Amino acid sequence: MLITFHSKVAAEVLMLTDHAGVLLQAAGKSFGDKIPERGVFTADQLAAAIQGIERAIEASQDSPVEEEEDEDKPPVAPMARAVGLKERAFPLLDMMRQSQAAGAEVTWEVSRGW
Image 1 (cartoon, one colour):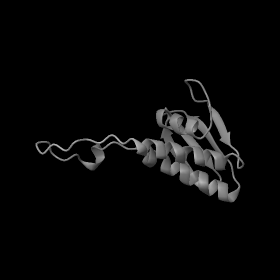
Image 2 (cartoon, helix red, strand yellow):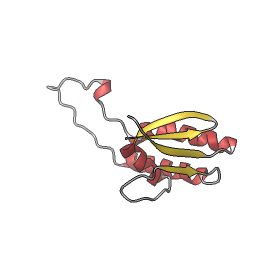
Image 3 (cartoon, helix red, strand yellow):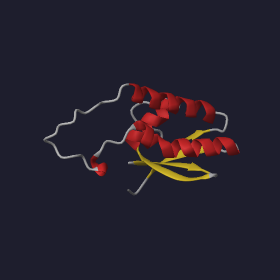
């Protein structure tokens, strides 16, 4: 399923629930094994949420998984490379920063029909 993030000051951000769940938890939202149907980061909560996501990104970069280069293997195509937390978080962080600057909230909801 998809999660759609909304803000009055930025374009919508769509994310798979598995990826959104990691970022929501890093941003300070706690939930069980299922993401709530709807949620909000108030303008006051955005600073802490942004810091939480940035800390999670730093932690994920501290222990990178390095692949040994094998001369016998062909190079990996750019589309076949793994996408890290930093890249996945970028659109949401950008939305949160724009919203924080404008004093707007960020909401999310589970997208139906996909």
